[in-house]
Length: 159
Image 1 (cartoon, rainbow, N blue to C red):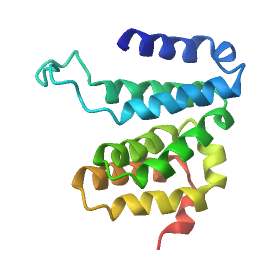
Image 2: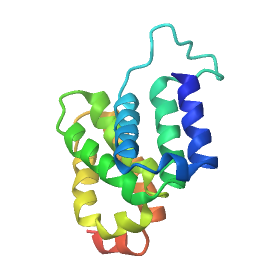
Image 3: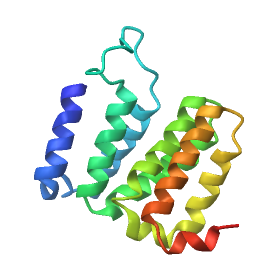
Image 4: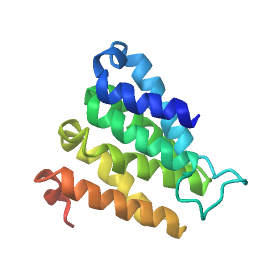
């Protein structure tokens, strides 16, 4: 799977037209990356080994690359759909992945997401109210990324 994610990085960066020929294919890819972002680290993963990353981290890196290099209209609908569904999940990992996925696509999908802030902000605010600290941390990270990339529109939501 690690090699497959590296291929996705490469294709997204160097052959984005090939990858974005089918919007449905891109949406399926984004959905798979979002789902993978919610996976727990494998039990044999050595936390001391800096060269080996957990699947969730690799998936969010690939999602970032896809969002930066493919048309935003192919990427953001799938991420928003995943985030809405995952934020209502009882699984902490799914709620955290939802917010992390939103955070990493804010740069690449900034234009359409500026126009959809009314849909995005309730998701971020729900994450900030989550009872689990890692989910609140992911929401704070996402809010920071939104503040960086969704200017000046996000300022309207200061309250």
